[in-house]
Image (cartoon, rainbow over all chains, first blue to last red; front, side, top):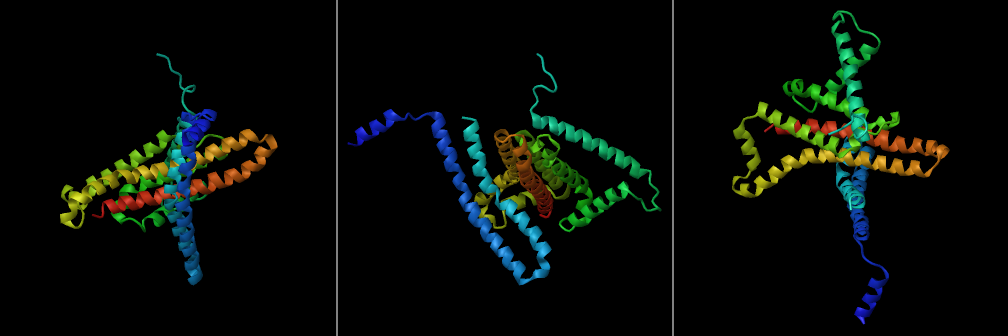
Length: 89
Length: 223
């Protein structure tokens, strides 16, 4: 039963190199999930800090921008893998 | 063998050469003019703006680094900052940003790695460096030594790669949007695209690279 179903699927759509690479590129973008959660949490903490002491808003802004840009890097690694898979395979 | 200078170079290498040439000529001319100034009179005009910019940069970065080390590394940091600011916003002038090429970004990693090694070579001894690599807790050193060695290489590598991926995403999205929309749509959408991807992300990444270079150099010679 399973072999006939699988045989039907594989005779209808063949699995190629390019197809698997595109599938992998789609899965690689899932690395953005953790980045979004982490950066949103840090932004919430920054907003709370500004609310607690509005005089320090300038320093908090500079610190927030630097830390967000550093934390973004791991999400960008997923994008790099996806671009490499699409254009070099 | 035959080669030509402007036919087989990729577009971001051409813009690297162009930006380096323009910035070098500009800096040399401004430097020669400032040398001829009288130290007792206040300068005015464009040279005054340049001097104020260098003063602001000195005051800002010397909070994160000692005085003696800042005298040694200040010019390098300022040059890198100016090159990155001009290079990341080069899309506004019609040329491809130089850092959208993997070679240029990895060259930045190699240069940062070399500068950190030069700083360690000049300011701390070999014994202190090996002591730092083995970690604080001595009996765990077979575990800490590979991790610290990997950390030495990976820190400059991620600094260069961060710049590359940020600018590459801007170039890819801009190319796709411009090839779909026509003339009028390209002008309208280009305003929003370049405002986000070039001005905002480009300047933030240049600032982050400067801060990370400063902090890494200062950490490496702190022992």
